[in-house]
Amino acid sequence: MAARAAMTALRLDLVHIGSQQAERYELLQFGSSAAADAHRRGHLDDRGTYRWTVTAPDGSVAASRGYSALFEEWQSTVAGDPQPREGRFNESHVVPWVAGGRLRIERREAGERFRTIFDTVLPDAGMPVPPAPWRSDRRLHELHGDGPVRLLMVAEGFAAGEEAAFLAAARRACEVLRATDPFSAFAGRLRFSALFVPSPASGIPTRPEDAGTTSFGSSYGALGMARYLVATDLHALGRATEGIAHAATIVLANAGTYGGSGIFNTNCLVPAGMDDADFGYVLPHELGHSLGGLGDEYFGKEVTYDTEGADAWQPWEPNVSPMDVQGRVKWSARVAAGVPVPTPWQHAEYLRLMQVPLLPSADPAARPPAEVRAELAAVMAQEPWAERIGVFEGARYLAHGLYRPESDCRMFTRSATRFCAICRETLAGVLAGASPDA
Ligand SMILES: [Zn+2]
Image (cartoon, rainbow, N blue to C red):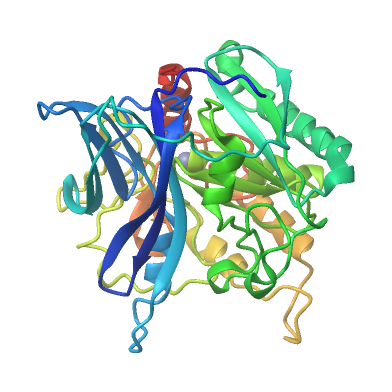
């Protein structure tokens, strides 16, 4: 990996800092980079809570990109806390180097309105900029395909002697995605690569307090949720992937406990040691978040059903929608005549099953998770309007007030065997449109 291409991009290591009410970015360092990765042409700006934009000295937009950030999730978890809280999260962004241009980062406020939270001038062409730091102990393996949409799988929590185990995990991920629509339909556009970087210790900590033994600061238990597995040191992840153009980062964690995360145009994290059924659900689901900007369609887990504020807050995800007074949602044009709106489904039965306490638990009503999952799958298999586009109430953690396009989807239940039509088309658009800049 000694040879490096011409420096056409800049990597900026930023810290996203703020409280319940305010936020800002601080620039820690920046360096020249060999590759701005794929799909940086602004066509994804309709998604993501944030957006960066690079403008040329004449003010014209050279590139932009929507994304989401762990910061906003943290902010929502502390929103009701009366004590002032401060959150600090590492982020790394690679942007095209437009000499003398500007980089602006904005946060979405409502709909298409954005507010600037960071603004800086990019270096002139004659200005010496040191290369962005990178990990020289990495090893890049090509697994399959040579298309323009590169899915880069990165090792996390695999120690120096565990490269073979990581590669086996990466091959399994490759096979799962190659067999999952719409990835299978776009096989010719895909390229699967695996990047091994050794972690100081083997395994993934179960608590954020114990993070630090892996390359990218990952742990379970992020934001107080046991199954939420996230990488927090995105500067370190930026150093690992430096100069490797790719459309999506899939971090494969050396752990078997159910969990994961996917943050739009940032990365997704999946435990590589889960059994086939869970791995086959979690990997496409989290990539749906991180590559497609899809929202969770489920509700009834670790959330309240408070719909206050749902009217004012407009989800940007294409598969989640409120309903206006005329009964319209984002995908109304796709709902066929004869499909009732809202579309009936077994809402109460789903909610009842989602609230069953699961073993291990001291609750005498607790039942084995597999048994409850099987019952839920049986319920979902009997939906009268299955696989039809409709307007199904319950989505994105809310039982009421938000709607999803089909009764079931990979963004909804673990038993789903396909993405709904809207999620599939959204992902297909990314796979068809993404192309490398460099
Ligand atoms: Zn969906």
